[in-house]
Image 1: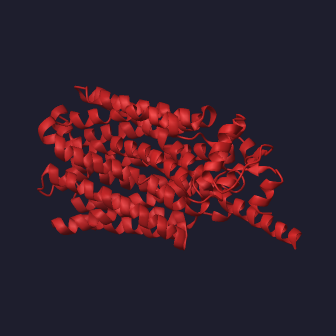
Image 2: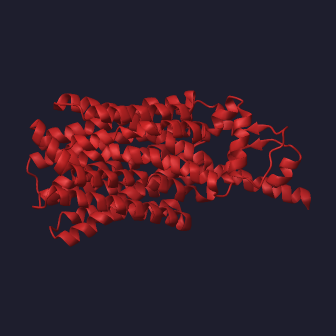
Image 3: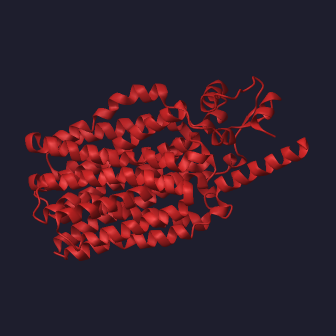
Length: 461
C-alpha cells in the first residue's frame, strides 16, 4: 500500500519510514545548515590549538611531549562528553542538550583565552572538549533522523564537512590575528557561538522519536509535513516509531547480531581519528620543521581543511554510487598512502599535494562514516550508539597527538613519525570491509518496506 493511500484511510504512520521516504527540500536544507553550524563550531574548537601550538609552547615553556599531552586533554573531555552527555540526550531531548553543549564549549573557549599558565589552559580545554564531545553524536543522530534515506550518506558527509570548515576558519584567523594580537585572540572568537543560541532554540527541530514519546503530536505533524509537503496527515493519524524503541539502548547495540560490527565500528573510528588528530594537530609544527614559517604551516592546515570538504563531497557521492563500504575503503587507502608519503619529501609543491590528499582521505572517510554508522542502529538508540562509538574512539584521538609529541621529543626521524601516523589507516580499511551490513537496521527497514509494497501490490491485483 502506498503512503498516500494509507494516509487517506487514516492508518498509522511510521514516523521513521515517513522521513526516510522524503525528498530533499527547504526543510532538510534548514536542518543541514543548523547541523553544519554546530559541527563547524566544533571543528574550530578542535583545531585552533594546532595553529597556536608553537606560540603556546613558547609562552608556557613547554616541550613537544607536554604540548601533545595538553592537546589530549580536550580530547579526553570529548570522550567523556560523548559517553556521558551523549546518552543523556536520549532522556532529556537532543535539542535541549545541544543548547547546553553550545553554551559549554563557547564559554570554555572564551575562558581558555584568559588563562596564564599551562594547567588552567589544559583544564579549560578539557571543558571545551566536554561540550564538543556531547554535541557531535547528537548532531549526527538528529540529522540522520530527518534526512531522506536516499541522500543520507551524502548529506551527513557534508554536515561533517563542518569540521573542515572550522579548521579553515581556525587557519585563516590564525594567519590574520597571530602576528598582531597573539594566540589568545582566536580563542576569544571561539566564544561567539553562544550568540547563536536563540537561532537554534527557534529553528532546530526536536528528535521525532522524542516527540512521539512525549505525545507532542502537533509539533511532530508540522515537521512531517515540512519534510513531505506534498502529502497530508489526517487528524486521526496514529504515529508510531520502530518497535526497537522500547529496548535499552546500550544493551541493544550488541543485540540482533550487531555485536561484531559494533566492535568493528569502534576499531575503525579509533584508528581514523588517531590519524586525523595526530596529523592535524602537529601539521603546522611539522611543516615548520622543514624550515617554513608558522604562516606557511597554517596555510597547509587551511588547504588540508579545504581538501577535507571536497573529499567529503566526493566520498558521499561515491558512496551513493558504489556503496558506502567500498567508498570508505578507497578513502582509507588514500589516507594511508598520502600520509606515509609526506615523510619522503620536503618540496613545497609535493607536500601541498600530499597534505591535500591526506585531508581528503581521512576527513572524507570520517565524515562519511558519521553518516554510515548511525542508521545501522534503530533510531531510539542512535544517539547512544554514536556517543559510545565516538567516546571510545577519542582514545585514538588522544593517543595520536601524544605519541607524535613524544616521537618528536625523542628525535625520531620524520619518516618514522609519519609512518606511525599512516599505518592505522590500513586497519581501518580491513575493518570497514568486514562490517556485516545485512544486520543493520537500515537494511532491515528497507526489506520491511519492500515487503509491504509487495503485499499492497498483491492486494490491489
